[in-house]
Image (cartoon, rainbow, N blue to C red; front, side):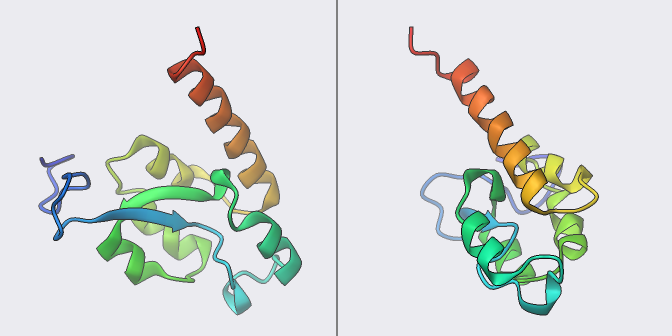
Amino acid sequence: MKAKGVSEPENIPNDEENVINVEHILPEHPENNWPNIDPEMASALYKRLGNMVLMQASKNSLIGNSTFSEKKKVLKDSAFALTNEVAKESKWEGKQIKERQARLARLAVETWPMS
């Protein structure tokens, strides 16, 4: 299944060549690529749902611990709306992660209501 006319699809179940995985936008070990994020903050924010997006594994491995501006170039081309919308942010820090997490929580409730 192709999305947005790309040759490498983003979602084919059980297809080992086109694996989708989770990208942590703010990496676990941001080091010098994220000068405004200290190690304690990175540790607190790294595993938050608001910091994660779905991405083709091949692209995820290319961006690794890159800066947010470098990651944005890849995120913006994703066929996944919740992934490419992150590229609209000017920076990626605690505030953006918390806001996105709250938005995802609201979307989850709307998508999967309890009644």
